[in-house]
Image (cartoon, rainbow, N blue to C red; front, side):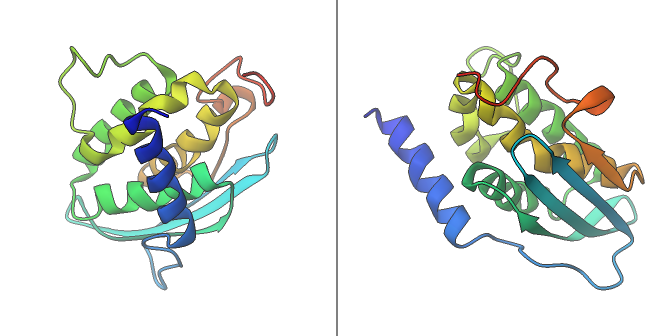
Length: 163
């Protein structure tokens, strides 16, 4: 097993067992709910944005290990960031997960999130990794809910079982 694949598995398992920022925020001024109806991932995101800065953020819900780890690492990455910087991370993560961002030649701000780069090779898991980020985008723009299917599909043409 390659070192990167082993690191990926260790990070996923760690964040799945002990997710960071898990729970809800009472009185949060931004909320969104994300759902992947094909695999059952379902998360709720709550956060407080003050002066264009994500002050607090938390998530809760049910999901596979990849979805939960992605949400856990996402909340850590965007906490304290501006809305604009969080949106940059949303786009870069999505590009990395779908294989449209070349990590070798394109500058990015992903840092530790690069551990998810291998998900692009697992089509049925791409939406699992992207769902928290898709939900973050919805919360930033006052959309109460988002799905990984239909017109809101962040990765059109990807079906569960395609690997």
